[in-house]
Length: 482
Image 1 (tube, rainbow, N blue to C red):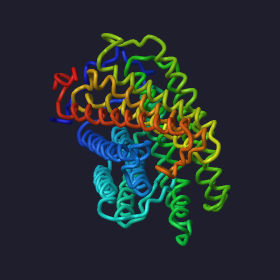
Image 2: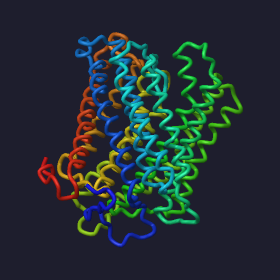
Image 3: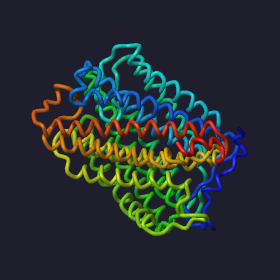
Image 4: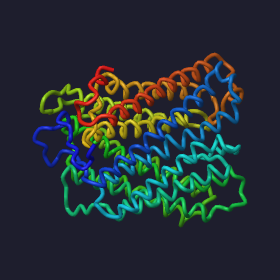
C-alpha cells in the first residue's frame, strides 16, 4: 500500500468545513509512515498490557486468586501492565500525533526515537521471564528492580527524549492562526512543551534524589514530579481529541477557536508550577510533593470543564453531516467520545471524595486514564482511513468503545464500593483482608468489570488490525458484519 497517496475516507467527509471546525489532515510521505510506526507501537503496548491485565484481574478476583502465587505475581503483573498501558501506550500515541503535527525536519531523530522506544518496550515485556526482580509499586512508573527491566526503561526514556526533541524542532509555526486547525495544532505543540518540562523534572529528580534510599522510597521520589507533569500532557492530548472527534462527526462545538486556544494555553500554564516546585523545595520534602499534587488537581480543571461542557452541548445538538447523522463510519467515533467524557468525569468526581490510602485512589485514576485512552482510541479510528486503511465500522467497531468503557466503569464502581470499606490499594489475595460479603462483592464487581474491559481492549486491537490488513474503506467487507 502506498502511504504517500492514501486518500481519506469519504464516509468521514464533513460538509462545507469552516475555519471553526477542529480538524487536521494527514501529512504526506515519510511523516505518514512515522505516524503509522508510532501507532503500531501503541498497539503492541496495548496487546501486552491486555495479557498482563488479565492475569492481574484474576489475581484479585475472590475464589480465582487462590490459584496464583498472589503477592509476587500480582505485583509483577501490575508493574508491567501499568507501564505498558499508561506510559508506553500514551507516549506512542503522543508520538503518532506529534508526527502528524510536525514539519519534515529531523526525520532521522524521529525514526531513532521510535526504534529505541520499541527496543525498550520489548525489554520491559520480557523482563519478568528472564530475571527475578523485586516489584516496586512507585506511583506513575512502577518498577521491577532488576537490570533488564531498568535497562528497558532507560532505553525507552532515551527514545522519549528524542521524540520530544524532534517534536520541538519540527513543531509547525502557527503565527496568528485562530481557526480550528490552528487551535488543535497549538494544543499538540503545548503537549510537546509540557513533555519537555516533565523530562526536565525526571532528570532533576534523578540527579537530586539520594541513591542511598530504599528502592521504594527512591523510585517514589524520583518519579513523583515528572509523573505529575505528564498528566498535563495527557490532558492536553485528550482535550485536542475531544474537539477533533466532535468536529469529525459533524457536531458544531459552541466554542470559538480563540477561546479553545486560550483554554489550552491555561492547561499548559499549569505545568510551569513544576520547575517552581524544584526551585522552592527539596525533592524529598512534603512541600515539594504537595505542590505537584495541588497543581495537578487545580490546574487541569480550568480548561477541562469549559471544553468538556462545549463538546457535550455539541453532541446534544443535531450534527451536520453530508449524508446521514447515522453514518456507520461515525458510530465508533461518537461512541469513543461519549465513553471518554463519561469515564473521565467519573474519575474526576471520585477524586473529590478520596480519603486515606484505599482502592478509591486507583478508581479515581482509572477513570481519568481510561478517559484519555478512549479519546485516543477514537482518534485512531478517525485516522486509519486517512492513512489509507479501511474505515473501522460494523458491530465490532461500534460496540468496542462502549464495551471497554462499561467494563472500566464497573471496575471503578467496584473499587469505590470496596474503598468505602477500607480495602487497601496495591494488595491482592489474603492481603486485601476481605472480611464481609459487601467487601467481597465489591472486589468481585471490580473483577467482572476488569474482564469486560479486557475484552473491549482486545476488540480494539482486533478492529485496528482488521483495518490495517486492508487498504481503502471497501476492503474486508466481511469484517463489517462481525
